[in-house]
Length: 222
Image (tube, rainbow, N blue to C red):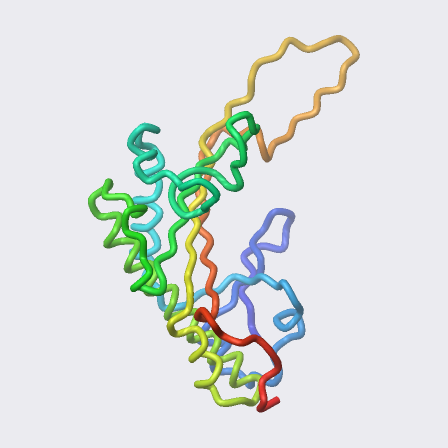
């Protein structure tokens, strides 16, 4: 498969792959790096409009910049991860990471808990619904390609995911400016650049699972 490498220098881009190229090539010749467990790769030409992704980023950033009191209207319930808050908070005395999280379960639609979907910015719910729908389409498409590569009915695997669960987690890391400290003569200064940042960072991760009650095991066709 052909890949586009933006840069091979240190800190350059990872190889970026096209969904269309993945579908058009002889799928029996997919490089081994795509069938190893826990692999990650970037996709271009995935069919999700740039405007949809950009609007999702804008609305998410705007939500995270609201006052804490307003965001707490969507706070997680005890021992739950859906809603606004942080991951795995077990006590009021716990030291927390310097980040905010909004975790929502948009699929399946009948099980949506809209009370956790922000109403401000006003466009958030519509934007998030569109983003979720487009991600689901890409997921089903890729699962069909996997099924075809395995030599089984391309409709079989997607059927397990059509009504499956989708979780989208949005993470916001606010600026964490370095604190001025008077140096001690002879001391070593250890600067953890991943933690001491001057610029905010936003990430959005989506998880797609088979529908509830699906039995997991070897396929009869294999």
